[in-house]
Image (tube, rainbow, N blue to C red):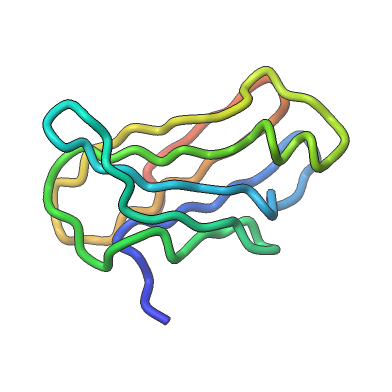
Length: 112
């Protein structure tokens, strides 16, 4: 299996474990509108490696995380029913965009 140019890893920091089963969609900004490029679901380790093409053109991209569905499956609620992370691809190196998640906060960073 090939790995996407963009991957992610979601950690449920409130529960202290990987966030398995979160639906993730990768979009490209196509001149003002967003076009879906691929989607996946986080595995038992909270990782999604098959989100789209192996190579992306430079430009702006968005990862959408279905966090509300995740918390509902856990029997809880969240202030953020979904999280959108917009970032810029400028080269051919791999882009890893982790999400640290809790019911009332989230953070992200450029991973490796």
